Image 1: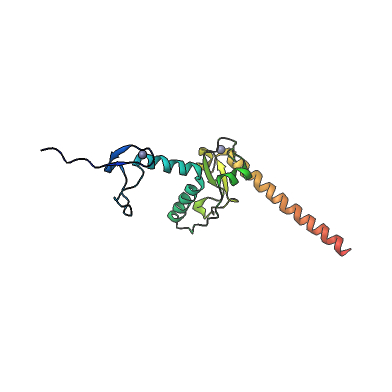
Image 2: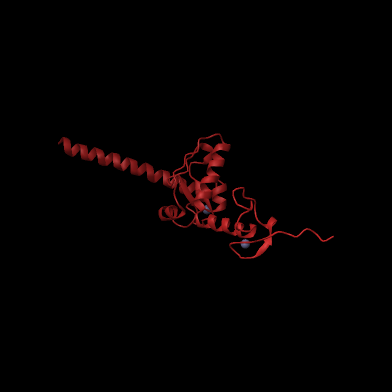
Length: 164
Ligand SMILES: [Zn+2]
Ligand SMILES: [Zn+2]
């Protein structure tokens, strides 16, 4: 007896004929399978992720926020917008931009917004006591405080002008 013939299907992407099992199931398709083979599908998903990493950032953030029992607050921004604002290096130590860091940590209810996110290297992202990060955060806090004081002074000076 000859073995049952293997059903072959041609992948729309790589044009290779492969056994039906090489295609992921898809209920809506007429033959119940994807038109791209699993290998091509994997590459496509990887390319999609590389082209829009912010979608993965948001998905990861939502999962983590829910895991901490916090409401997920998401204001979409792209990698480009992040780099425009903070540069293409780790915002804390100037190392490589490897991960997205939440300045107010996700565990503390920090939102997923351009204001609260920074490009970060892996070590700075994972370690909030990283010396470079602590120093930079302290500097930022001082600058913010000085700016707030300056604008208060300005407001007073302007008010004094108006009143005289
Ligand atoms: Zn293929
Ligand atoms: Zn760093």
